[in-house]
Image (tube, rainbow, N blue to C red; front, side, top):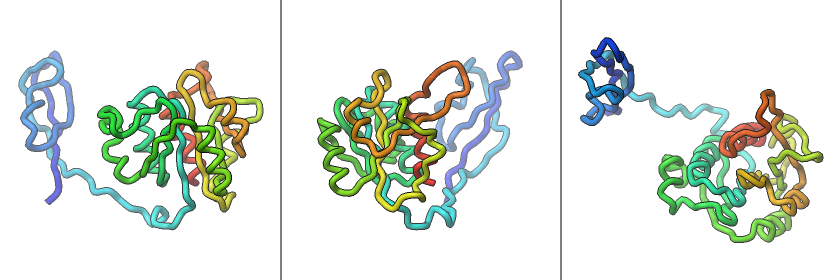
Length: 210
């Protein structure tokens, strides 16, 4: 039997908050905003995950390398996106927190069970080894040598690909950029010049996994 949730609405006319509540959870029956009385507007079953035919196809190996990512929340979010885009391994380097950190697990929502991971103190030494094993190294960074990420698709190459994202503050280690086979950037349309690292990974991962 599936799981159900309710859409509840606050009866306080000055509030009127509408929000979802999982069936069987007593905490939240009162309005989370004003603590007023609420009522169930509708009840609905959670949708089952749909596995589309195109995602059943065998894809080339994809991995992500997170070098000195400070935020455990960003790391957990990247794990979840990595699983969604078919990445099978995460190399966690430098000060990047691992899924042993509670905040990583909280935001990954179990994705670390599907994306294997390993920890490495020195990303440069790791990448040198991966290149010897035949991996194509792609770095995500604003750089004079970078091409728009939309021009790079995994289908163009037969080798396994590792996508590097770097520190939220200092970016990808310059020596890693020197080792990269390709550097890609995300064109920005607004005034800010960069995305949050987890968002940036999601954008780049879509292209790399296509």
